[in-house]
Length: 325
Image (cartoon, rainbow, N blue to C red; front, side, top):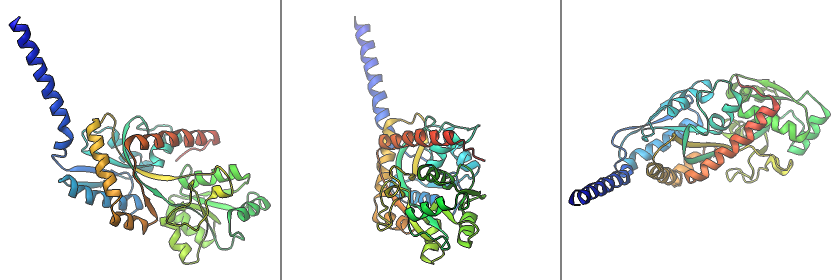
């Protein structure tokens, strides 16, 4: 009897120690530097966001949070590195709607599953996605642009950063819902697409405000609308495309991810830290200045956004037969 009782006591003590160790895991984290992978080149809005986040997380976590740019394959190279990493919180990712909701439908040989191979940690920001035209286009709003496109079928040329890019999908969705036919002119990146729209080689472009708004301010492009579901607080006087075409929406977001199967307490800790940074006035002001609207969420809320967009845009991409490069 004594031996049975002793065994039960030992088992209970071991179980208690196990729970205590698990409960303290998030408190002990991090014990070494954390790598924050950005799957695009340095200098863009995602990179700026990552460096602002890393600066403040370094202070609050007490360990360096190092930004590591791993560009290539439309964000897939860096994202795949995180998908294959240990779920210990030391390798994290700044992902986007394109890497996680669009690429899996666009590309045949994906190195990861956009939804299932990651742990959503929290929403970070929305990029103001603008609809702009060259000043030569005789349209000052979306309704006038639709009328012009219908009067000139196949002649209104729109630029994109390539087949399957956010620019391309925004325009294809517009064509479908507005009932117009336009000419797609793909480029190898967003910068040359902006340059040629400014020059008048193409007439229409859907692109992040970080790329278009300086040209709008300089009078080289006309801003007609934004593509989000509601007006951007950064551009409150600019209508949405959906105000003319009910149901039209394309919101471009950035979020923080870890590998799948991260411990729940560690996810909660990182979510608290990330949300705190995104609500700092100095962070909001810095991101506002480049046309990026900061945001916060729980991991569960961000997971729902991810699944919703993966289903919605994945179906649209497949239905329209769009293929990435």
